[in-house]
Image (cartoon, rainbow, N blue to C red; front, side, top):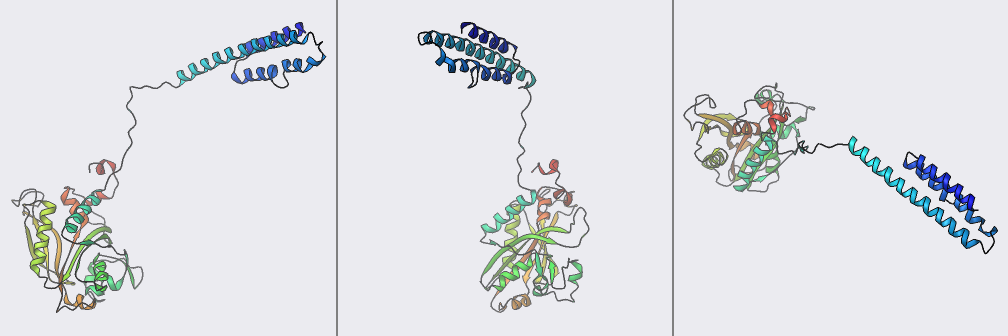
Length: 339
């Protein structure tokens, strides 16, 4: 028995020394110490050993097991250390390199301008109302005093889905829908995307955004309109900003006007930004046409109101001194990250 144990120990220790990986080392451990291992087989044969010899044989088996387990553990530690060293050589990290920065998005220039306009009008008691971008011809034109034979329909180059459905050319239909509800008085702005069949250039796009405002109440006059827009201009462009109203024509307002603001770059003296005039056109406005009030079941003898509309992109272009509208939609990170 002693010779047999010595032979097993010699063979196992040789196998341990010859192992070149942790997998092979584990195979040696199983073949020697596992349920069907060489030492286990000897222990199973202890019943054939004379009773007086069993303690001595058991001690010898335990001593051999202890030597093998020690050799296995030491070899395992050496292999793991060597493996760790090799891994560290292959995965060298240069801690002096700059870290990768996460790119965090931010608001688009249009969004910044819109939130500024909304803040100003909400501060004056207005509510923000939205409506559908695919609109009925009636709300987009007829309810705004633009019948089918009106030349304004040709001027707006409308995208028609069919004879009755269009992509809205303005956000005025939202105003009509609000007036139809009959909840007076009304103080609202209607921001949103609109569509016109325009060629893409520095100042035009087939898809852009408008912000239109509407006030309906008793005893509303043009003076209220002027005061409101003057306050809006000062809040948006600075306290020194002045406004100028020029007569104009819109089918849904009477009288109507175009509004200019004094150039906030030169203070009205004349510069490249305002093309030497000292003034910059920003929006159109007017008193709501009585016919529009009647079609919305509002008595024009009792109620009056004013409306105005401004292009959101125009505000963004002016406020941030951008000279090409296409920059807002080309998604060039070099441009957008400036905001």
